[in-house]
Amino acid sequence: MAERDQPLDEPAVRFDRVSLTYGPEADVLADVSLQLKPGSMTFLTGPSGAGKSTLLKMTYLALRPSTGRVSLFGIDTGKLNRPTAARLRRRIGVVFQEFRLLDHLTAYENVALPLRVAGDNEKRYRGDVIDLLKWVGLGDRLDARPATLSGGEKQRVAIARAVVVKPDLIIADEPTGNVDEEMGDRLLRLFRELNKRLNTTLLIATHDLNMVRKAKADVLRLADGMVVRQPAPPPEPKVTPA
Amino acid sequence: MKMRSSVSPLLPREDAREAALFFVVCALCFLAALSGLVARSAYAAADSWTDQVTGQITIRVRGTDADTSKAVELVKQTSGIVSASALTREEAEDLLRPWLGASGVPADLPLPHLIAAEAAPGVTGIGEALTAKLSAADLDVTVDDHVVWSTDVKRATDSAGLVALIAVGLLGATAIAVIAFATHATLLARRDMVELLHLTGAKDSFISSLFEHRFLMLGVQAGALGALLAFGAAAFILFVVKQSDQNIWLLPQLSLSLADGLILGLAPLVAGVAAMFAAKVTVMRSLSDML
Image 1: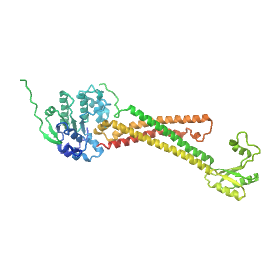
Image 2: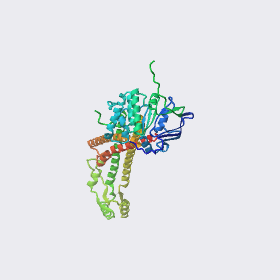
Image 3: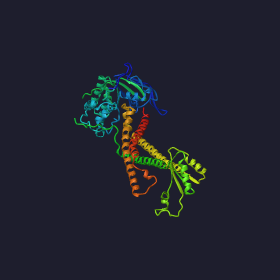
Image 4: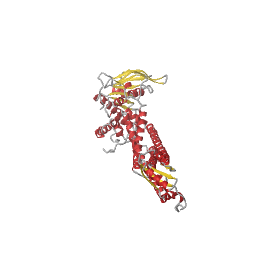
């Protein structure tokens, strides 16, 4: 488990007047301010091209804002030296939209990657990784390489990799985009479990309103580079046969 | 549950590209090791030739046998001279045999009166001192202490050695540049993987170590093969020289001595360390572009 040295009153994620500009007139994000409390679960919605992935990239330290400040666990990410940034990244689990699995590694090795990077001993984490893969329904695909996995299976490996270190913050970009409803429900339960048991903060970008409804979590809507906090969408009315 | 017991390396093998790089590094190491052997031979030849003539003085006396005997006595009394003796006719004929052939010197051919003297080690300016002393005694002599000749020989062999050392340096620099280029190409090909490791919290040193280890092994293996080929080439040259039964000016110095073994043994290590260093610098520079 990564170190948890965050002051109790500090937001897990904080954007202060953050903007990102490509070229003179292309604002991807404009003056965005937001805060995510530690242990909160937040969905980020909005139309395609609204800047959801950009906002997530800034949160997992892959992009730097043009102006403004991004803080994680009370740490200003603009002032990090490289070793500190690496340590901070280990507190974040990311589910990438395009999975980003390593083709030459097996499903097991892909999930174990963050533990390997952190220098953990394989004998210690082996059982946990296998259990996690079983939990996401891939107990019989441990040795399978990504090329032989379906889109949904790749998605589940990517999710298992993001949660294997029990991070303080999980950032997921369309985590249920390639899985069926039943698997989507299981993944949502996994996210909730991490959220409740380990106080993990979750930021999930999604188009899946059904998932948002079921989760009953905070919703941020991103449109035209601006973020607006919204209430959770009402439950879908049950259709009864006439 | 059955599972593979070994864990895959994080940096995958790239057979075609690495085979080409292996060949290039191997060829460069072969040339560098061979140049190293040539440089050592040149310096050894210089030392050998100058050691042989240092302190040796030849005095030619134009006069009678009595003049020669007088000159020998005067030379022996000179400070810094260890020994001096007049060459007999047979000894003088031996010196001339390479030019006049095995049939010998005609009996009626007048031969110069020669004195062979040896100066103590470290004594300088003895040639001028002897010339002055013998001339003062009314003797017509030419003193040759071989200084001019040995200086020329040393200058020539030192130059050859220096050229060989420059070749070693250039080949080494080329190998480093090739490996840096190959590392950069591997980094570009594996950018997704490097980015993922970076975003997963891998330190720069961790990512760099993957490439360092890969190129260290490649450098050591390619260097070892290159050194082995250089050994084979040197042994072949030695064999050819010995077969020819001729004294060739520089080649007899190209023996496979302990120093040559050291050069050949160090080549893989130097290649490995240089490859590792090139990879490290390239990776760290590329990573510094990432946040």
